[in-house]
Length: 156
Image (tube, rainbow, N blue to C red):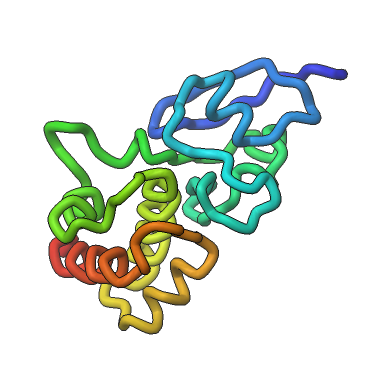
């Protein structure tokens, strides 16, 4: 197992970490950086629980090698807002009750952010398409879609 240094920006802060070249970005986020918001649901890129932004693109951190993040900007749910200053998406998810067990919520919010960064006023169909890589076993999705719609109005 060969270790290497990966230099990247994490939630706006420069970082350099030593990591085994075979480790995933999700491992780097959770085990090396200690950011526990991104979850491993399936480990196969199907559920979206590990979704993060890498250079503005929503990616499944379980499928990306940590070394692929070299020189890139990484945003996790921890970088979106603080308890005293929530991001509009975080506020909207709370306001409409789009959170139940919470396991999928960080990935949902990050995917929604990627969508709203590209399209500030998406239709319901566009929201559904933007969240199609994220699975939720609790909510039935309608409240999540309502939250994204509400956030798109609040984010202006």
